[in-house]
Amino acid sequence: MLLSKDFTFDSAHFLTEYHGKCEHLHGHTYKLRVTVEGKVQSNGLLIDFGILKKIVKEQILDKYDHRCLNDFFDNPTAENVVMEFWKLLEDLPSLLKAEANDPNLPEEIKRLLKDEGSKDINEEVRLYELSLWETPNSFVTYRGE
Ligand SMILES: [Zn+2]
Image (cartoon, rainbow, N blue to C red):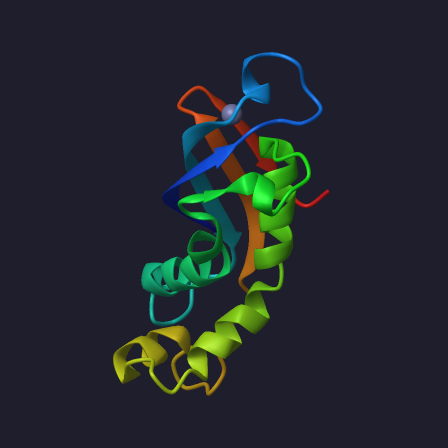
């Protein structure tokens, strides 16, 4: 099964290897869709939406929201940005494990992370696809290929 969650963030950028409107500094409200793939556990969940939100916030939004992407990328096209985001989320099982071991995580959410009757989190969940919208009509999709 696939499960997706959408996020938005505001960032500025200018394109360095491009001549046209986008070579000048400007901003976008980017939309990021994170899609994961896995089996539904006996608790009826593939992954808790709240945990996915926390991971994407910590790995991506906290770093790039309200920033100029040129501070992080030589040429921040949607293509280059989505490939970097993939690297930040690719090791989803480890990120989930880190969340599960976070002592500040409420017990209720810890229970959701773990398959019933097991001490382990659902490590079968893997990153499947990222889509990044630069405008409502223009987006890229990446599957780590
Ligand atoms: Zn732009």
